[in-house]
Image 1 (cartoon, helix red, strand yellow):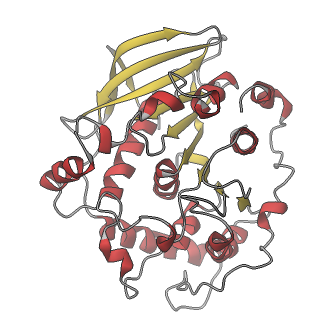
Image 2 (cartoon, rainbow, N blue to C red):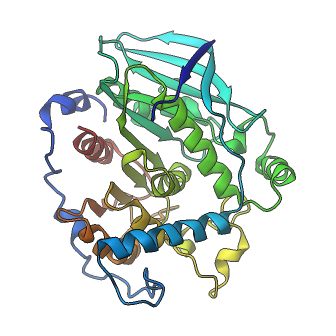
Length: 358
């Protein structure tokens, strides 16, 4: 058992840490900030709540109100445990990475399993970037992303660990000691009848950040997150509500409510179909500002959830980013490869995180 106090594409990826200079921008930042030729005219509410757009100080006041409105909508969750204690269930000694299967307390009294991957090279205390890697929808959950099984292009957390990051891969509550989604949601509702499933996912992702930040070699000022599909949804919410996350990439989660199954009971439920409900995801992207946030979309094909239709949400939040100064580190990378995270896209993802977690 370990305990600590929580502090206030495989291949070429290993070269990125030294290749990217501190304070640099990704070389393709301007490209991901260009409106697509056929961007839809999506109508989104004002981020200023019908008040005239203001300066940065006015936004900071508005931001706190907006954040509180969202948390009220998501419903209450208990305070997270104050410490970070974990049990190692298994250790895999790879040539360049050590991979631990660990178990820790998520909600009080509820255990969560995750993989923790660490480079085998020596490091000073608080010297490494840390990344929360949130897995997609798969019955194998954290096994492929951590490189335990599956094809190499799914071993994304392992690739980031090989590039110099400490990476934690928590298992989503839908598969943690539950026979199916319905049973997992029913158990959550029994404990928290007024709380949406998306807040449970956010809570668990924040708990993973707690564990990551408690690692002695992780710099708590250099924490990032990424996820694909289901994991991208979690990444959007984690980056919006946890300011410890300095850079994030959401791949094919579907920013638009109608682009994917946000109405599922384990996410936001049928209320998102109501055109009169006031919340939408451009507000979350604005909450992330000025921290680096990239949406990756595949545009077409089975399951594709982000693409040109995601641009209006980026565009709506861009003025908020610019209140903090230039450059605005937010964008949409539409790779047109469908609902997948290819090695080429993974290299872009890694470049984004290594650039903005220098």
